[in-house]
Length: 183
Image: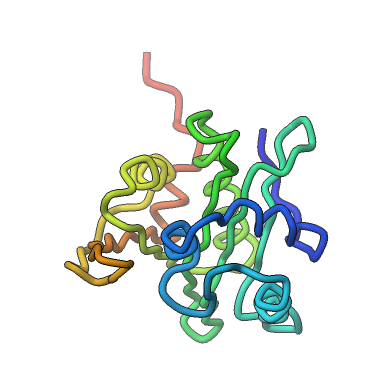
């Protein structure tokens, strides 16, 4: 059981501790907005984007059934005119990797996006080498829509980016109880 609560200043030290390298920073945050090392000043500015009547992002700390913070997740680039957004900055705490909590985190965020915000589309970008992340997103209902070849330079490496998306009707099909089979 995973629930999402708003990400707050109290979460800053934990997130800063998780982002231990420039490569991990780019994996978590993408190529813009943050520079390594992650700082509270950067996170203050980031959190400000979630304020106001029509915030550009909603940022969450996923919580286990035992009450432990197990990661970070954002519904970002919210476009109220287009009823679309991006799922981004998904991070599973090191001690929870491989435990299956990422898919419930993502599903909770999708429920907020589609059911609460009334979005019609949510997309995401994930680096092609992140096979566990891609599997998680596929389990949650995302489909691959494209590949941005050699799109991100990190040190001497150049990474490919997979673009994935899910539509409201696809989400609805995944979350509608199936009719009982005819006998």
